Image (cartoon, rainbow, N blue to C red; front, side):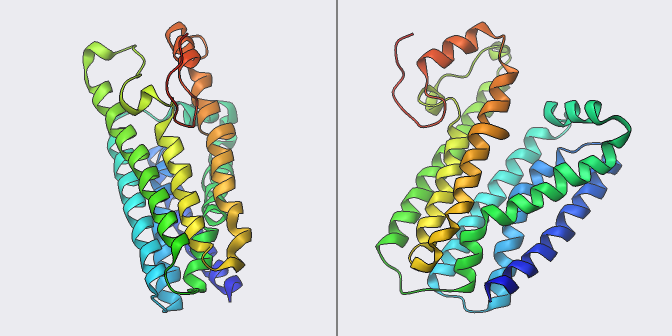
Length: 258
């Protein structure tokens, strides 16, 4: 039954990312993939909920959590990128790939992202296929973890946006609010939210192996597309090096003396 859910989700995601790719080619901007990230999980979650048609409390809770996260993230990224040039990551790849930009964008940006969506969403797919026992302690712990993660991501993004709006902050490093305790509160928050959803899924112990999803997103945020890539951008910035000396990279902690 889970294989059927996964197959259906794969078809839906394939259609979504292919549509996004066509739009990206037309606009010459692969930043659309970032907006699709949150939308993709909403599509996966609601598709699997409606198709399986069980609608247990646990399934509805997970679905609502993914909806809140996905809508906020997609809206935030859309507004952040609106009217701006293509993100530096995609612009660099475009230059690197040359004439093969179109096909490589489809394979390495959109299709690969679709695969990652399915991987990260494994706890959701499992929960929406097998409702499991009645609501219990793990569900409550998972929801609390998700709420903390949502706070870090949403508030962290908002604080950074407000900071960048002030012309006097141009060229400065954001080190206030949540950014005082972690250099990447939004990435930490996203990781924690997915671990929270995994804990909810774990109410059905057969879901233990779906830890692959939150483990992958955490690794990706730490070592691939998140912390590592963004900090490489500030490699030669003296102020950022000082910030690195005093502030935790990922997990929130009190700032240390430089």
